[in-house]
Structures are given as C-alpha cells and as structure tokens.
Amino acid sequence: MGCFFSKKRKQAKEPQPGAESGDRNAAGDAGPEKQPQYSWDQRAKIDPKDYMFSGLKNETVGRLPGKVAGQQFVIQDCENCNIYIFDHSATITIDDCTGCRIFLGPVKGSVFFRDCKDCKCIVACQQFRTRDCRKMAVFLCCATQPIIESSTGMKFGCFQYYYPELALQLKDAGLSIFNNTWSNIHDFTPVSGENNWSLLSEDAVAQDAVPLPTTEELNTVRISTDANRSIIPITRGRRPKHSEESCLAVFFAGDYTTANARKLIDEMTGKGFWLVQTKEVPMKADDAQRVFQQKASDLIPLLDKGSVIALEFNGDGSIAACQDIAAKVFSSTKVFVSEDKASASREVDSFYNFADMQMGM
Image (tube, rainbow, N blue to C red; front, side, top):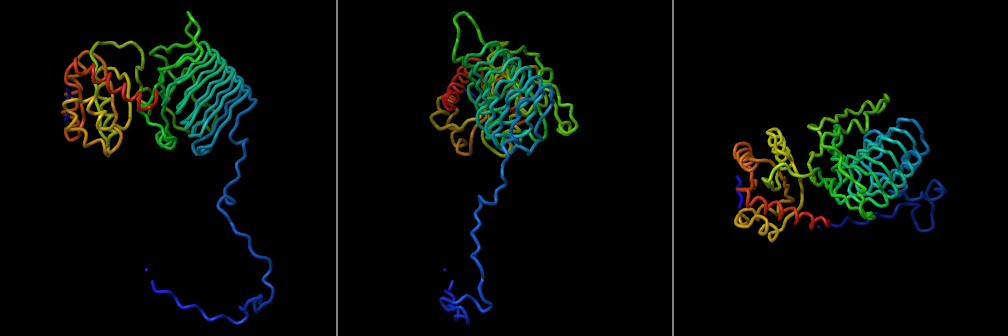
C-alpha cells in the first residue's frame, strides 16, 4: 500500500560562350581541380600527450573543465602526486601509481586501476575496476557494481564533491546522480577467511583523502567538499541500518523530478533520517504492479513520461515524516510514499530488486 499525494522545375540555362564540352574557359586554363573537403579533414588534431600524465613525481597537475571534453585519458607511473581531472572523459586507466591523490570527474565508461598502491581517490564513473592494487581509499560514485581483482586493503566511501560544472559533466557522461552502487563491491578473487575490502568510516571526509588543489590554475575551479553541497546524494549504502523502519518514496518523470527528489532528501535528512539508497530507472506496467500493488493503476499512466526516481529513508518515524512532507511540500506533484512499516519493507525490497535486475546487477 502507499499514498501520493513540389516547385516548378527551372528551365535549363542557355549554354554560355566558351562552356562547350572540351573548352576550358574564356580566360584560359582554370588550373587543377579543387580537392573536396570532408568533415574529418577539418577536425582538430588530437595530441595524446594532452590526455596523459606519465612519469611524474611530487607534482600537482590537472585538467580544467572543457580541456578533456569526453576523450580518453591515461595516468601512469606517477609517485606522490596530486592529480585532478575536472572534466568528463570516455575512459581512464591508472597504472603503476604510488602514493597519489586523484580526483576524476565523470567518466562515461570505465575507470581501471592497475598495479597501484597507497592511493586516495574521488571517482565518478559508469564502471569501476581494480587489479593488483593495494591499500587504496576511494570515494566512489559508480552506476554499476564495482569490481576488485587481486587487490587488498581496499576501502570505499560515498562520493562527495561539488564544483559548478560537475552537474552538466555528469549529464554529458550519461550518469545519473541517483544511480550509485558505491558500497556493493564484488571481489573477483576472494580469499577464504580474509576480507580484501571494507567501507570507510561514516565520518570520513573526502578533502582529507584528496586535498584541494593549490596551483594557481586549478584554484580557479570553485570546489566544495561539504557533504551537504555534494552533487551526488550521500547514501549509507550497505552499512547496517539504524532502525527497522524504512520508507520508500518514488517520484515520477516531470519538469522538476530531480529538484523534487533533492528537496525531499534535504527535508528528511534535515530531520535526522538517513538516506539509504537511491535509484533512477524506467518502469513498465508489470514492474509497477509488483511494487505498488493496489496503487499501481493510478501510477501506471505516469510511467510513459520517463524514468522514476526512488529514495529509501531509514529511521523511527520515517514513514509518517515522509508522508507529512509529501503532503505539505509536494501537494501538486505525484509522489508515492509508503503507508506503514509492513508494506514499506516489501515495497523497498520489491523496488530495489527490480531496479538491480533492470541495471544488470
């Protein structure tokens, strides 16, 4: 259960003097024919060195917004460096780096760390993978399940970062701020009796891991690591829940869906409730029937407009608080909110099981 609150052809021109077959022109030889120009001939040439940091030691380097613009990037053989990519990219590989602090703006494809150790990172990407890495701390936003392989001492926290261009860069990279599986780690090479990864403490601060840049050029980026300003909502993920009471809230596609979801998050967390997880996925009628049951008939017509955004809150009294906020703040917006603890538990499980299957997890 839940509640909501054609042109005529031109005549051929008369042949002009000197235009007969075999003639050049009245002035004489016109010279060689002009070669055709193609679009790919006019593209700016890309220098791979502009998209690489290699062999650096004790340096602070980076790329400003607009300087990578969706290209691939490579970071390799760096030691004790602060590295910042304040732009979106296609893929990024990081090889053989030691003791580095790395910020990677939105990556449309994969981020792959290989043979790295003692690195601290802030990363937003579609896919995240490590191989043969040791002792890394990662504040992560990842749309799919993160994978570690032959890696040990890995620690993960939720992405927390802000600068003005970041929201548009996430969009350019095809990433939703609500699809973040940062804590759902898959260890491809588990060792019996050992744990190769863990979660960072709840009070871990991104700026402590990756300090703000100090160079004059990079200082032009207006950064905030205040958790309350983070573009990506900060979720508890798979940490133990504080309460047996959870609440599911679902917004349907519209002009202000994202803003409404962020507003509800601010209202609920401001009252002391915890945001456990979020998801943005398309739903079909059968999916809605399983999740919303008796309320589905009222909601199914809304599904054709686009993806839904779902939020799970946790804490004693979270259902009543969410219903109250929905009624007062979103009275003109269609939003589903759980009605009671019994139905809420089933709705949360049903929705996120469906969402994980939808995203291939």
